[in-house]
Length: 240
Image (cartoon, rainbow, N blue to C red; front, side, top):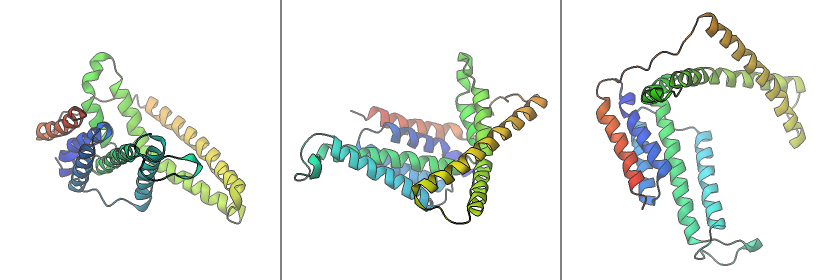
């Protein structure tokens, strides 16, 4: 079993722990643990768009909590009757840490479970739910197809956008033209996605494709799975 697959349960534990963290200490610990596990899984340094998205979301969470939560004043009177509170700053920092921890854990899982591996692993973890008539195999097939065709659809949408730019002959000017360009890309991309989905469905039906049973657990996984469960359990219990 690869190193990335071994630390995947630890990344899942960091993900769950980040989502349910109720203390700043727990949030910081989950972020650090997720970053170390992601590095161990061989995850590359995040791109600029990823950093801007996560950083922007964290700053927005802090700002909204500071302004919307009542409590001890953090600063003097603000314009437009706004109020900044110390309690809001604490809640905003906690929410930002939860967001960052979950994002880092997902970034690591992307390298630990590349491609359809994520669908296979999640199906293996949720296999006991089949006894309760939960369609785990069907969900695994849908998720696997989504993971396989999402990059293809993204490239197709980019190709359509470039064609629309060439057809227009110049860059968009103003928000009206930008909105029109987006609409000119979305409609053909959506039609192409529906047509591709129909062809894939017909191909699967012609081959009598059925959901395969989940793969058995590999060697050495119980220890890492216990570590991941321990991280999630600590975050859940340390909410008081």
